[in-house]
Structure formats: C-alpha cells, structure tokens
Image (cartoon, rainbow, N blue to C red; front, side):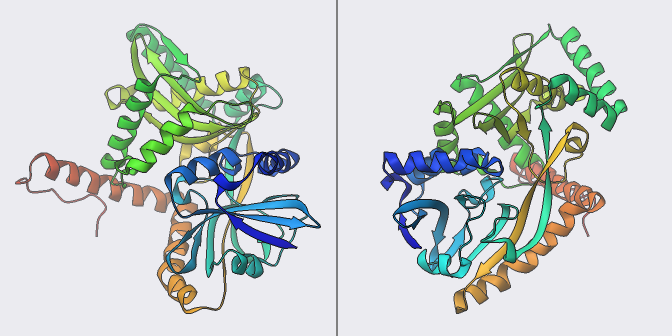
Length: 374
C-alpha cells in the first residue's frame, strides 16, 4: 500500500474523477462535506489542508482529507464547521491507522463526526451518535405521515403558525436554490446575531468562513452545490437556510430567521417548506446532523450514525493534546446526550449572550444575574 500526501489543488482530473467514483459507490459517503469540491474550496482558504492519496498496485483505492496543524495535530477537514468526515474509499478498505498518521506526519487525529464503522478507524471509536435525517425516498407524503406520528401536536401548531404568518403578512413563498447574494448576506447577519444572542462564538466574525460560504454558494454542479433557501412573508424575508448538497443529499448547515417574526416560529415553518421543495427537486435526504435540538426528533424519519474517537502515536505532543482535549470532549458528549443538561447549558449561554449584548450597547450598564449561572 502506497500513501502520498498532496494539497487538494494538486489532484489532477483523473484523481478527482476517482474521488467522485469512490464516493458514489458507497451510500455512507453521500455527504457533501466528503466531496472533492469541498476539499478544493478549503484548500483555497487554508494552508494546512492536505489529502492522503492511497494506492494499491498503482490503483487509487482511497483518499483521506485532513488538516495538519502545529506539532502534527490532525483535525478533520473543516473542523468544527462540518458534520461528516472520514476516508473516501471502498467500504472494506482497512489500513493501519497509526501508519496512516505517520504517512501524514500527524501525531494525533481527533474525530467527532466520522462515518461510523469505517474499518480503519472503527477500533478507535469511543462513541457512536445518531444523526437524524428527513428521508423522502418513499415520497414526501410518507415523510409527512411520519412527522405527524412523531408529534401530532407539534405539526398542528406549526401548520397553524404557518397559516397565521401568511394571512397576516401577505402570503408565503419559498425561494429554493437562490443565487441572490443579498439573500445570503441577510441570512448570515441573522446567524451572526443568533450566535451573539445565544452566547456562542460568531463564526462569521472570521473572514475566511464568510469567504468559504460565498465560494460554496457559487458552486453549481450535478454532484455538488451550495443551496440557499429563503422563506418570504409577502415581500419580506423571514427565515432561511444555507447548506451543501450532493445529487441526493442536502446537509443542514446555517439555518436562521428574523427575530421580529419569532412568534410565528418561522424557522420551523421554513424547514417544513424546505423539506417539500427538496423532495420535489429529487433529493432523498436532508441530514440534520447530530445534536440536541428538539425539533430534529419530530422532523426525523430516519437516522445515520457518526462516531467520536481519537487515534494517536506515542509522542509528547499527542500526550499534551490528550490532556487538553479529552476531558472537554467527554463533557460535551454528556451534555449533548441529555436534553435536560443541553437545555440548562443553552439557558446559561443565552444569559451570557444577553449580558454581552447589554455591555456592547451600554458599557456602563450593570448586568443582571445570569439565569442558571452558578
């Protein structure tokens, strides 16, 4: 087995075609974050992006995209931005994971959204988590029947709010696969506001992430596209989503809404309409990703699985990395897996978000006690 490491931009036409061939041959790899187009876009913006090309008897049998940071610390391509990573290879390909790390000049590789069960990494999986999906393979109406079975009360409430929003604001329409850059800017401004309001780090404060989103929005091909949807009430945008799509799978990425319309639950109304548009366009699945949002439980009609874990070589850098990261990863898993803890953590973060917003608007203001904080 021969392993060579290159920048994604150095892959020629035959190598890129082989990547797509391997991806299409395995349904578990049907995710745009595993596409060569995503690797190429990341390579335009980040110097630490690499891909290991795996050959057997002069034939490429796999690709391993990753990021190589200081001290040989390896991370999945796109890191915290992405919801799927792993080897793009035949399902039965099994490598010595530590030998792969050595070829990639990595001391450690942490993963938290790896395609579960890949033979190379399966021995290092510490946990496997469900990622709920909306599955339209048997038709949109069957999916809707499942949603109703999951929670008739929630569906009834959303439909009521949907009618009310349309009635009071001039009717609803969904713009599917919009190429309007101003709509994308509007969505990202909502998302930045949401990050700040809920105490999270604003990802779009980093220019390279804004640029990556723009590159993805401009991508249009049969196998890979950025997809922007926007829900309008009359002539006013009220909620939207930007995600990435293969020929059959749309992955949730950046949903957001205008808080002026929060009483109508425009985010969920948008998701329902986006699901119908996706099914009509021929998509089979919307992957909502793992995580503790309650709406995923009643919108889902299927489940994929992603793994968490760590591979390391016996080096001082790997040991230091373990001390710094492993306890945090375990704590995060516990919180995400327990709705009560997730809600409590979410309340605390929102409280800090309100304090931060108050201080930013009035530096002399005395913050009130943060609800839920110790």
